[in-house]
Structure formats: C-alpha cells, structure tokens
Length: 217
Ligand code: E4P
Image (tube, rainbow, N blue to C red; front, side, top):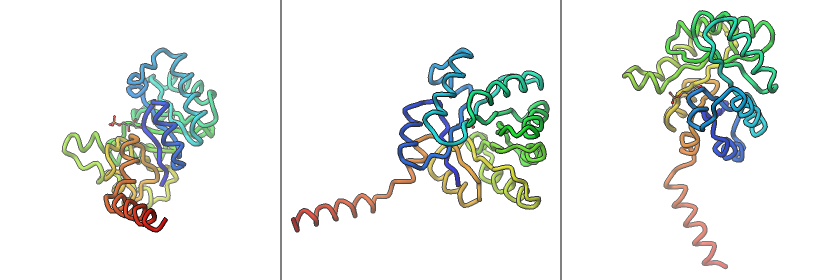
C-alpha cells in the first residue's frame, strides 16, 4: 500500500518524507490556499518545491472545467516535473481529458469521485489513480469505506490497472480499514499516518526496557 500525504505544507511533507514511508503527495486548490499559495506562478513553483522534497508522484490539480482548458493546464503541469500527476475532476470533460493524457503516457488522478459508476468511468478512461473521497461521504452519513470495497471488486473483476487512491482520509482507522479493503494508496494528513505509530504498550514496554538497562549499568 502506498502512503501519500494530503497537504501543501512543505514542513509536513519533509517530516513524512524523513520517516522513510512516504510514496507521494496529493494537493488540491483548497490545500494550496490554506498555505497562502496563490497566483499561478507561485502555485507552479510550489509544485516543483514539493517534487524536490518527495520521491514519488505529486498530484497537481487543474482548475479548468472545459476539455481544452484542462489539456492546456494539464500539459503545463506535466511539463513542470516528471513526478507530476495531472489531477482532473470527475466530470464529462475530465473523463475526456483523462483519456487524452493516458493515451500520451501522462499520469492522471481522477478526483472528486463519490460513486462506483464514476470510478468505473475513470478506469475506462485509463486513469492512473482514482480518488474516492471517503471522509466526505462519511460526513453525509454514507459509508465511505463501502465505496472502496465496491471499487476494489469492480476493478478486480476486470483487471483494471487504475490504482484506488483512498482520499479524504481523516484519521488512522481510515488508513487501517483502507488497507484491509485493498486500496492501493491512501492519502491523508500527517496525523493519520503518525497515529499508526501509537500504542501504549509500546511506550510502557520501552520505558521498562530503558529502566532495566539503567539498573544493570
Ligand atoms: C484528495 O486528493 C483530496 O485532496 C483530499 O483527500 C480531500 O480531503 P478532505 O475531504 O479532507 O478535504
């Protein structure tokens, strides 16, 4: 299972990278705005900065909603760095753009996916990644994890190569559950990743080992 971090915060990306478990980064326009990164040139530079920190795929989202605009923007993003994955919205022109990029060997991430049917379309269009937003489904009393299970079953039925990128992961149990269900990738905040470290018996056991070592030395 690949671990992506879902942030545009360079310090958090560095911290996750330093753990040695990071496989990539996802961003979106809201995450960029949260870090105060605005204006086209600053945003493009920020993507390059992220690529220079992490080894792995970095999703960069287009903001156009028409086919021509998505192609123009996506090509510009892909030219920035070999690690860039063009992130496209799950709308009709986004599916068309996904097909266009996949035919040209440019990696894609189809985002804002909330149903199995949308995930099927993304796979048919040759998406590298499909991003079902599990947290946002949970937010509206719909089981986000169930969507991961449905997509896994459909993709396995037909051997689709598209990787299931569980997105909108909010906490550590989401990570574990996505792993159980066979998501290929998860993207979430640093806190969800660091939560995997925690167990009181580890802390108690380590304290005891150190205490006993001191006694003998
Ligand atoms: C995915 O690529 C999105 O950036 C992200 O996971 C959305 O998460 P949120 O629902 O916590 O905003």
